[in-house]
Image 1: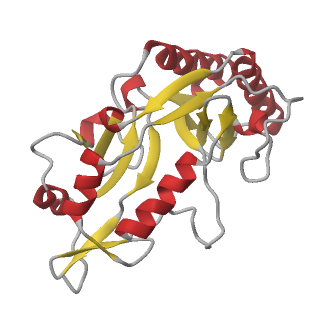
Image 2: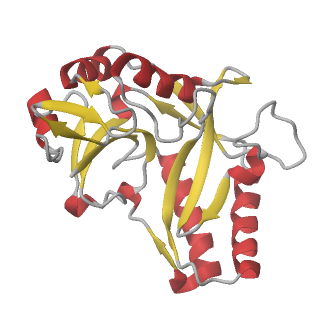
Length: 244
């Protein structure tokens, strides 16, 4: 198994749930059986992956190779995790929002079909301004705990996206059909005033998984304050390396 940290797995605010359902309905209408929507509770926003392995009783992070202290990690999630507000939707193609996501305008990045996955995105806000809160948090995990975000593969890499997968798409769909499906979902999202979603301790879930899609049937899901989520329990979900 492996472990990841996500937000809004399971129960969701009504406005976020409604947004997800409507986007899935648009995709089902345009792509029919070639789109397989995730269960609503399965849809989640990834904060950072905790993937790694055990070696000689130590937890080593997959991306950094550094040792991770499970107790310190859980203590941070329970006592120091910041509150971050995310805006989803409301990005017009003609407007300048003062930032890009991987060199691309947020209208285009707000929804895309990337290979086999249909992905929606939002970005952190502070008041009326956009902030780098998600990227800063991911770098803090690396600095303080040795947990490196998989997209932070260089020292100047930036990933400030709050992304959530809506479902799976067959790769055999033609480009014209894909373009129309993406345009329809982007148009819907841009028509919104912007749905605000708060990420905080109570919305976090630590998920141990066998399938990276995190289906409820095969995933073990813990709130960060769950007394069953101990450092030993967390460590038990990681595979042993040959040297372990």
